[in-house]
Length: 196
Image 1 (cartoon, rainbow, N blue to C red):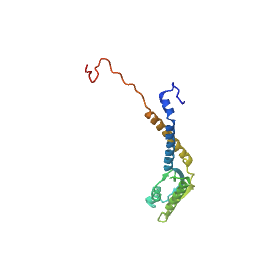
Image 2: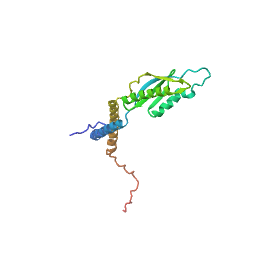
Image 3: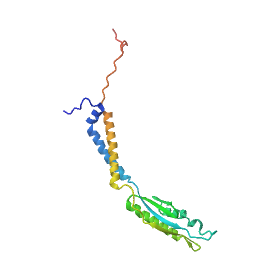
Image 4: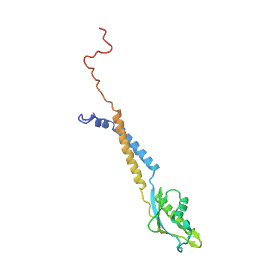
């Protein structure tokens, strides 16, 4: 005989009797969490740095105008790499290149490619014998972010939590409750009226 102790609250008794239902929802939640985590992996970021130097010009000379500005070169580079790349101006003439990717290798390779492209575009500009210079300051850093087992585990735990919560709610909602009918007040006539 598997009977619950009579002094436990009714909700605890209901949850105890429906452990299989709650376990089933937990397992389904784990599976859904893993699938959703696999379909939406976190973005990993890698950074690189480039030093840009415009040519020195005599006072009052134009020297290429906006073509020698870091913003112009950045716009040209972002045409080649339209998504997942951010180029920010830093202190002095240093520019930070921040790249997001699905894998660490992809993020690092793209960051290095963007840095090389920036140097190539800057070096290709020329105006009346003047050239801008750019060089890669440091190699791309290792990609940062959650490793695959970690974000899959997080998705599984989150799915299990939602599954248990949903299972408990379903168990409580499906439990039959007995409500005693309200007694009719005394002195009121019954319906239909008694023919006697």
